Structures are given as C-alpha cells and as structure tokens.
Length: 340
Image (cartoon, rainbow, N blue to C red; front, top):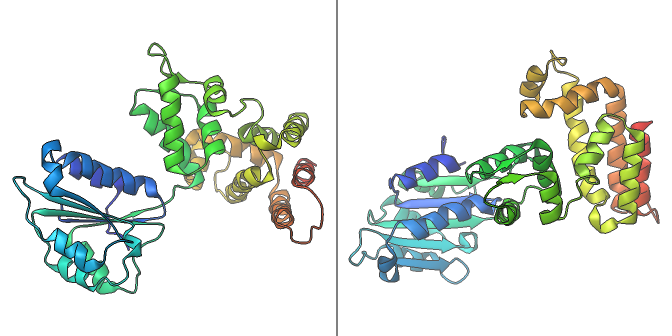
C-alpha cells in the first residue's frame, strides 16, 4: 500500500534537503520510524521563534477530520510554513473531509498524520490515492529478527561507536525488535562509555544492560549449534535457578528462528559456501557461519523433528495438554531432544 521507493532513509534524506511535501501520512506497527520522522519535522522545519504561532499538535482522539482540515487551511504567520502534526490519527473515524483536503492541500502547510499500530484501510482506495498524490505515504514495519544486528551496528556507527559481533547479538537477543526500547538502551550504553574508548564489549553489555555474557540466549544457541551438551546444560541450569534472567518464552522464538532457517539452508544449492548460504538466507555473511556448523551437526530429518518438537513445547508452555509441567522442565525436555 505504501508508495514504491518510499523508505525511512529516502524520506529523511529529502527532509534534510528541505524538500518538503504538504502531507506526510506515517503509518505502521513500528512506532520508532514514525516518531523519528515526525520529531524531525517538529524540531527542524520552523525556527524556535516561529513555532508558537505556526506549529500545532493535535490528537486524533480529541479532534475530528473537519477540525484538522480547518487547522491545516490556516496561513502561516511571519513564517514560510504552517506545521500541523496529528498524533493518534488511527482514532479519526470519518475521513471524508480529509480526503477532500488531500486533493487540494495548502502548499504552505505541512500536515503530518501519525497512524500507529496499523495502517489505512485498504478498501478506502480513493483516500489512499489522495494521500499518495498529495505527498508521502510511509509504512513503518517491524524489523525482522535477523535484521537487528545490522540496525544496531549502523546506529552505533553513526555515533562513532564500535561493537563486536558477540555484543551485537547479545543486545539483539536480549532486547528484541522494539526499536524504541532498543535505541534507548543503546543510548544508555553510549553515555556510559569513556571518551577515550568508544567501544562496546560483552562486559559493557553485561554491566549496562544486565545481560550475562556467559549465560544468555546467544550462548545457548551457540552451544546448541555446536552440539556442546555440557555448555548447553550448564546454561539451562543457570536459567532454571535464575528464572528472571531468562525463560522458555524468550529462548523458544530464538531457537525456532535458527532451526527454521537451518531447514531452509538444507535446500541451498551451495550449502558448503558461506557467501552462497548468506545470500540464500538473506543474512549477513558472518551470520552464515552458525548455519554452516548447524548443517554439519543436524540432518534435514533431525531439523524437521526439532521444529515439530518446538511446536509441541510451545503449545505446552501455553497450557495446552499440560496440566502441571513448569516452563523450566519443558525447556530441559526440549534441549535434551535437540542434542540427543
């Protein structure tokens, strides 16, 4: 539904060149990019002294479409633009007045519609078409788990901070794909670094985020990939004794993602090549090393059996056909099945 070629980077690049559109409709399940674009517009289009009379923030739960249009049609006062930011745009019920405005927007107004946790109803074709013709229709989508390490590396590189592969994976595994929380944690870590050493190590991650560098999802997966029975059981025992540090609910998606990709890897025409495997799985080349090891340690049949077992354990962890087995025991059962 979003316009072809419209990405976060393309929108931000145009904004920084001050190539403004009269309408930005920002929608999707990932609030981070929506906030980044709307915040940039709020903080950079107008000078501080111009904002009192020329910048308005409205909430979709408090106003209707006609009120938004009335505000958008107002001329700027001693400024080039009038900025109107509508938060919670998903709560606007009757959009007909907006559709009419989109067909003939005020060239001096920059209207920003922030539609979080969803997107425009695809059945409203005229409404969608009017948005696309008036300006930018941007869809902010959740990142896939495998794209988190590149995101972390890019975010830190832009702030002149380096990080090693293990630390990157530790952060990705422990925080997940909530980009607002992820960037907040990264900012916290950056602030803790001395000016003389802008480098994030596993020890820094453990100290600042509270993720054990020795006992975590990354190490558990590494032990399972290499079929290190002793190390895997050592980690599982640690988490059984420290349930707040991790549980089956955090590790099951991580392991399922690995074995799901490992199943796909078994069909790679050149599965002995790290580069070919990375292209086949659409991951970073360094990430393919685990799958090369996994291919040696787990046959295609075993992987299928593991995935089936994971579905069974997942159902049991949610109470299906499981009257009283605790999560810790379910995790031990799964790890035993995988390694034997």
